[in-house]
Length: 379
Picture: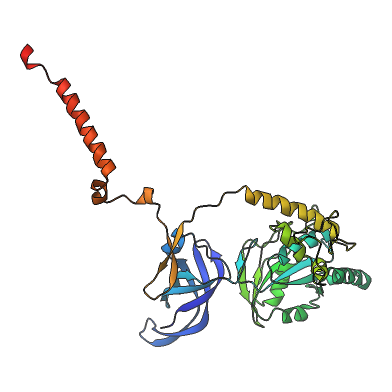
């Protein structure tokens, strides 16, 4: 029988909701003894203890192997996590095909600095980045055209939508028909409202924009994959105000489409390790493009991040690779010798240093005993 595999849709406490690669039809008996067909497409699974011991994390989007399925109870156990195509953090989702960045043209006001930070974070995942601007109904045509031209100069072709009038929703859905798409962005930009339109009958809780703070309130609390009617999966993620830029200085320029275009012209910088600062000689990236100042700000963050990595010691390996009876390689927990294992008695007796210690200790005890005995002549 072939292995039972599926995709993790949600992680809830110590349980994993897994959608199977295909639907299974199982013949069961009802309370009256009558046969009926029970269709199963999802299982609620636990994690094998071996995976927990080796520290194997199971994330939303993972492709997993399931053992011992209980078709009637809808349960199973995850025994293995297949190799990932990629893994993004904040939110943690595996095997992502694209990131859908959702921002609002108004309420809250579109901030170029915040938008650039999200774009660089998304580009660092090395997947397709799709930019969507919501609340098109709140701005006039001129404002929209100004933003569109500006973002085109950054290297992006934004999609304008309105979750209120539902304009542009069908156009956006056509870009999400395959693979796994992660929806991300600031709070209050309309992510949950958009997902309610893309996935009918879902009813994700939505919130309003805080009048006092000027930005949205958090409504999404966890990550979950939803199946789109047109195909593909969409992950709703908790909104946050400012993502962390976990990038290296050498890679940062590649996360700006404007810089990538300059590097692709075929004329390299004077130095192969050029960081494209103002004082770098013969740098092809340095120039008058709009986000160059932001690049320099992010570069200082990247340098500080790299320095923190150098000051952090690498943890010792806690796993080992073991061959199974079927010829596969799987990770097993590596036991610490001093903590979990003791040497055999034969090894202890064959240790000459240990024998010498026992002999010296025996002689010392013999002398102590002789000195402690009373003198027979004095009795």
